[in-house]
Length: 236
Image (cartoon, rainbow, N blue to C red; front, side, top):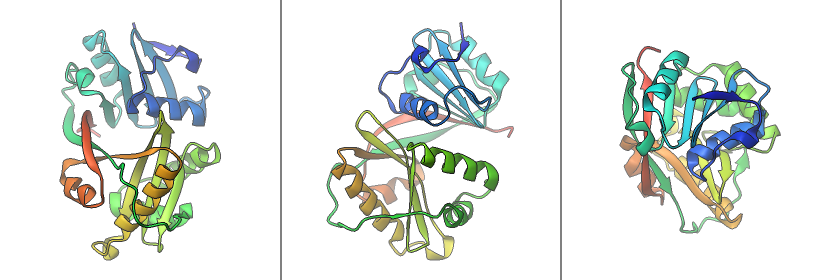
């Protein structure tokens, strides 16, 4: 049975990236916001966070969890393959997403520059398209204030975010470069600086990317280590 919970101590967390996503949301927001809801189901946990759904653990009742997702109708769903392959989500389309990590210390010893969120928004909007400013800014600034996330820029044209750190791994997201400045190595340079910083802090840099970007991240020193089940709501 799926139940809404009000105490993070009730969560089932297994040390995976998906557990880290749920744990980071708890650290940033707790359980007092309707847009950040925590659920427990047997040997698994779930998070409805803004327009996304994150699941971790074991899929005890795939039919019930599939119905739960369809009722909530998030824009995206992410979960381990052993979990996601048992779901029935007719209004969702699967995408191949790869987890990359970097263990080799880059030669570059420059320190990444903290990003101005106003400037970073211009870059991510240019790279990722439709993105509501108020929601993005409120979430990013809140997560940074609570020490969950960190945002960086390079020469005002490339950006990246350390989304959260969990169980010795630091997960990088929102890697982007202004369209007129792509192909000049700026994003790779920024990833070098962030990777060195994270490795020196004792955390392994990791990031998720769709398969079409595999070549870019391999060139940037990252190697694929896993895949997940990632679904996009085709009715949104």
